[in-house]
Length: 66
Image (cartoon, rainbow, N blue to C red):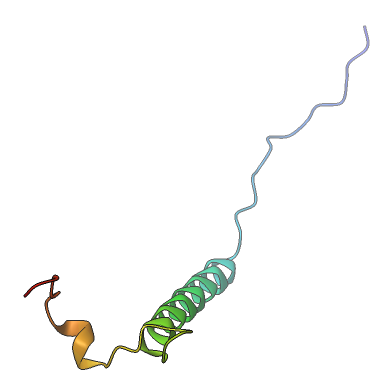
């Protein structure tokens, strides 16, 4: 009888905590860039934006005829 060489238990290697930190920093930066682009688009002068002022961002919406 021949025996195959025994394999030891397979141990999965987990990523180092610094990998998660880098991913978190990248996600925060992406969120900050997205918020910046949206704010720029809202406050840029027409025709490239909507021309809103900072105070207008926090006022209730005014419908037509009001």
